[in-house]
Image (tube, rainbow, N blue to C red; front, top):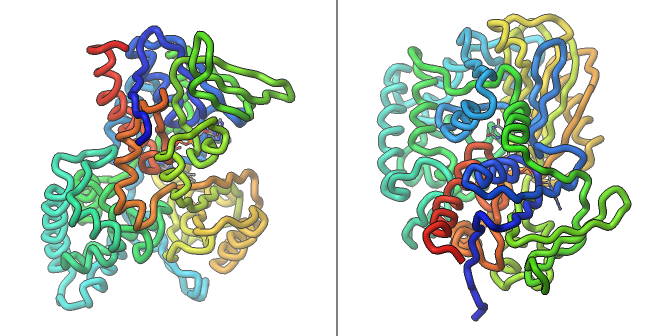
Length: 485
Ligand SMILES: Cc1cc2nc3c(=O)[nH]c(=O)nc-3n(C[C@H](O)[C@H](O)[C@H](O)COP(=O)(O)OP(=O)(O)OC[C@H]3O[C@@H](n4cnc5c(N)ncnc54)[C@H](O)[C@@H]3O)c2cc1C
């Protein structure tokens, strides 16, 4: 058996955080608010923010990473109030009609029409029921019933869960959620009518296809609050599900850095991590910064970047760490800012190309300009395109696929202005879930003076990463104040 002394950070400690992305910055801000002042963030790249990146052009904010806020995003909303109150949330459902154009890439572009997303979704649900009901209003009724049923199942498996790591289910449920994919879960519970909603919530956000990813992740992400918000947004009298930020996501993190006076070292390529260093401070991190050797000493380590990358750098990683983190699987997400002549029937603020997630085919492209201007946009506007893939491939190939897909639907004169490719949605496979790895990570927080946070430890979304940080702090930090080490 390994020695598993749990260490917790205290106000007297110096804390080193690896990764100044969403999780690292939020954790640093939270720690400073709880009295830990001596914190340094070590960041590999030349900027803070991680996947968050907002490009401004002619007064419009184009988010290349996170862009959406759902009504379930209570932690993001709280952070906005605190660090960036002037950054207004803009509803994305302004002008419900022709908000989306839906197509598939096999259609003849000349026959494509802009459509009402809600009508399309209702028709998809009707189809998912095998067209067994004669009227669409009956379909709406069946959707409401199924959503209610889903809420009951969710509450039984994950009692009182709102966000962050859900409570560990009992063994029978955990085995099912590991073995079943989302489609099988929906079928088992006669919830097929909800398939298009899950398609949008999961596949539409790049979290893998419904027939592949273990159902655990569908339930983790699609909480009762979210499913209810989804359902409401798809009803004819519905309320908007999503907002975007007038000035983008980046100012939120700039606000955190400024208000909390966070100390960040950029361009640090970490080469070695020792958590049992002899000397005044047990944590010792070495790296190269702009060609020069650097080292940092501290009392507590917080890993807020891809866990599988850090593992080989750690002197004597624990057995659990070696067992768990290499099991993480990731997808790839690419966002591209481009200017183009987009046909008038895409006179919408978003075009969803109804594709199964796969080999980096174009899923969505959108312009925030239409959200800001009540669905008005001009010719030759800037758009952001999103592509997701299961396997890594070169950026050239991904761009090529995007251009080909855009040409197929009649978009012309495309000029790529900026492009970002990210590892995305780290998640576990069936066996690792059955072994309870997401909960094992939580249980080993504080072992070897280390916390593991960010999307490698929880779920890929800004709100989930914030929620997980708070769970870790509420579980392990408050305890410190009571029994200081
Ligand atoms: C295209 C796209 C769209 C998205 N849309 C949304 C959305 O609409 N809503 C939403 O909620 N979420 C969205 N997300 C997800 C959200 O961005 C992530 O969940 C969030 O950024 C995860 O935070 P993180 O801190 O785990 O990782 P990151 O934000 O990626 O931060 C990790 C940081 O660690 C640094 N790093 C990596 N390796 C090392 C190392 N060895 N040493 C030191 N530093 C290192 C990285 O450079 C980075 O700064 C989107 C993501 C992408 C890519």
